Image 1 (cartoon, rainbow, N blue to C red):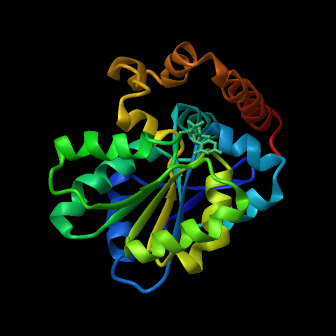
Image 2: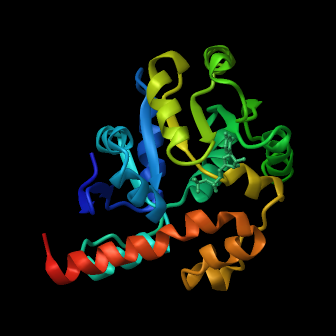
Image 3: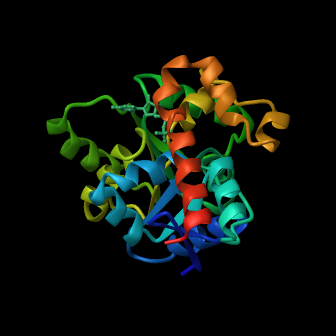
Length: 244
Ligand code: UDP
């Protein structure tokens, strides 16, 4: 278990990407399913009004610090979180390692066609990659059970779910025992990025914690998510100034 820091009621692990990958490789040798949450500022804000999501985070095996907002909050509150561990970066590392280490991955989520496009694009870079199944994330609640069975039948070791916070984490929690995977990770808009449908921000913007601005310019519909950032920062500053 990694050491955790309490960030406005959400306990985030003080981890590096390399440590998370090593831990996931250890999970692959076990017989149980493990839940990994990639928590950005919006996850913390959503958790404030969603006790079910808060509980999922509390019980998750790993909660990674995802995003510049979390790092800035850590600096302000002195939490000791030093590295961003995003869903996109974790997913890419796992895809790259799947061929070399011989484990398999299932992609669930994003609009019809996107996960398959993501797989094709990644295969150009990692020809040995083992993605054993894909399914889009726009299905009816009554279809969930058969998709879960499909994941299990694929024999995948790792499930990446890209359906947005908190739906992806809730789906994982509801079905963990039935999925047959050793690790399930909520990865947000990752397949949109891998498929090339959404460009990632230039490296200099990522370095300066401005990925959110790039996303907003590319997709103004994201305003409701970006609007959570000021709310998050206000809560962080309040905590810094008033404690409690
Ligand atoms: N999505 C999905 N099913 C839904 C709603 C959304 O598969 O019912 C997908 C959507 O197409 C996108 C991803 O979930 O690929 C959400 O990406 P976002 O960056 O908004 O994720 P978050 O920041 O919430 O983790």
